[in-house]
Length: 381
Ligand SMILES: *[C@@H]1O[C@H](CO)[C@@H](O)[C@H](O)[C@H]1NC(C)=O
Ligand SMILES: *[C@@H]1O[C@H](CO)[C@@H](O)[C@H](O)[C@H]1NC(C)=O
Ligand SMILES: *[C@@H]1O[C@H](CO)[C@@H](O)[C@H](O)[C@H]1NC(C)=O
Ligand SMILES: *[C@@H]1O[C@H](CO)[C@@H](O)[C@H](O)[C@H]1NC(C)=O
Ligand SMILES: *[C@@H]1O[C@H](CO)[C@@H](O)[C@H](O)[C@H]1NC(C)=O
Ligand SMILES: *[C@@H]1O[C@H](CO)[C@@H](O)[C@H](O)[C@H]1NC(C)=O
Image 1: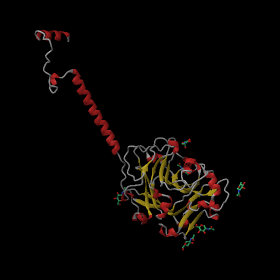
Image 2: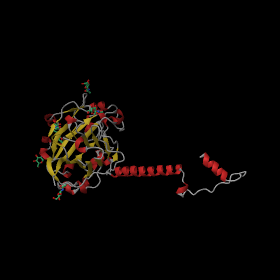
Image 3: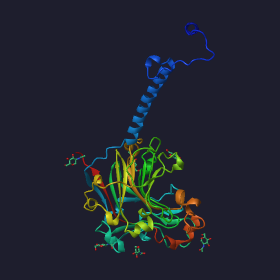
Image 4: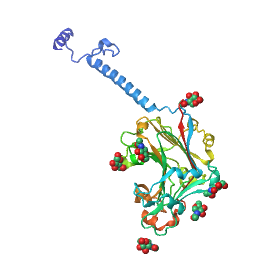
């Protein structure tokens, strides 16, 4: 630089008392660009390319969505009428979720009227069944249930890896201390083979239904992933080791469970479990698709689901296997029994276990009534 400077200076002639600014070279003339400009341009170009690539990847990521194209479903199993309870085992062990409950066996449930088929319930006329409704209830007779109240938990004898499951619900249970659920899992391989909570709520059941998945590590739904659902996403990691095993949940509007749901005559919950993803629809009684009623269901015509768990960051096929249908009404336990949860409903006072022990008559709405369940399997093309 010094050599040039000297030359320039020599060529410049006598120095003036002030420097005459040289004509500012146009930055549009590449010949005048310095190495700094070239570096800047190179960096900018690289940044643009990287940004475009990242943007493209993120855009593709945000738009990625599984192929939920139509499957042809055919009826596999019918749980209805006199064949309802015979297709379930009654669980009688200590409640794995620590409820203040005694799950009774089939003879006890029948003799105490905790499970029964009914022709007489007023709302049964509007179920999908022509052969009565199945009722599962919490005991309301014991006035001093100091070691826990009697209830039922039944598990289907059959297990499923995939399929479409139709649950016709005439009445959903609610009331202080209750924790009812219709769900699917492999009880002896939990959480390895996954858990799908199709219908679940606690206490007064006035917060809407919650649909939730629980899995081992490596199953997430992805916060910024495309989903097609009307419900509200709660958590995104389904791994049982995160969020205190809250799972990845989706919450529905208040009329998807409890008194508000029952006032609509209940309705149908539909679960589709396939490699592309897991979806759950909730149809109120007045709006059940005719293909469900006619037993030729086609989810591709049903519109947006209540909950959608696409397979984008979760290999559904490996995380959900060997699923049995479980129906129960737990009391207190890991969810309903937490003091902050139990007392969140103004009418649920004191401790959950005291309520269960003392308030037999408060369990009068603590019963499931089902028209039945129908399972469908996809037939090969
Ligand atoms: C059993 O429950 C059903 C349905 O609520 C009711 O109609 C029936 O009277 C009950 N039977 C007995 C023996 O309590
Ligand atoms: C329901 O009604 C059918 C047909 O009327 C009858 O055969 C059946 O025994 C009834 N079941 C009950 C539980 O009342
Ligand atoms: C309830 O049961 C407990 C324990 O068995 C007993 O001490 C108590 O006296 C009973 N209370 C009533 C009102 O029967
Ligand atoms: C499927 O589930 C049943 C009941 O939970 C269990 O006994 C069986 O071992 C499971 N089978 C497989 C292949 O995981
Ligand atoms: C999650 O599941 C594992 C078994 O795979 C179990 O050891 C662990 O206690 C579970 N964690 C919770 C919070 O349930
Ligand atoms: C469903 O059935 C139709 C008509 O038989 C057939 O064309 C189509 O390939 C089937 N789709 C699948 C996924 O099996």
